Amino acid sequence: MASHFVNLFFTFLLVLLFHISPSTSLTCSSQTFSSNTRFTNCTDLPSLKSFLHWTFDPAKSTLSVAFLASPASPDGWIAWGINPVAPAMIGTQSLIAFKDSKGVMTVKTYNLTSYKSITESKLMYNVVDSKAESADGMMKIFATLELPANTKTVNQVWQVGSAVTDGRPAIHKFEPDNLKSKGILDLATSADNKTNATSSSASAGQSGNETGGSSTILKTGTNFFAFLFFIGVLLLQL
Image (tube, rainbow, N blue to C red):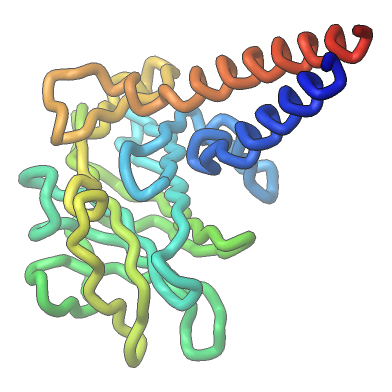
């Protein structure tokens, strides 16, 4: 009887383990970069399983970012940008990363003025440097932008797409997750060396700390499974 109960217990435990969502187990605080690159802040963005790392230098008014996301397909693209007017796609000064015709990661700049098509163009913000990488199904955009003096917050917009046609990113899906991929990034918090300073436009007025909640979930989940393992060891002694 005891042996049957133990078998049921461990079967239940395995089912739980296999149903843990990757988006729950992966958080920005667990991510590292090559060349020892470090950022002051990071946040788990509230949609598209995306992550943003950033450092804001108020003296120089420069914003250095690393945006990480998985494209909608292996041959797709990812994008991150700043909208000077509102957290919306149209008007966004965007950096879009994808693989070129030779399969090499590249990042290009686009001033998004239409939902139907986009054309490569300079941004209203000076891009000091930029590059793109890809590994383990995830693409990364690295860039440093010069912002207007005394900038305190920026409207950020991010997106993923499934295809690139003739060197031009194709239109993305309009699923709920795609439509809510926008928010406000609090640079003042960045200057104070705090984390998770982003808020979704869909939950205006709420603290940006909510986007870092997956870290708490991971910690809680780890403690829960440690408890279950301890109970399992005790049952084996029966």
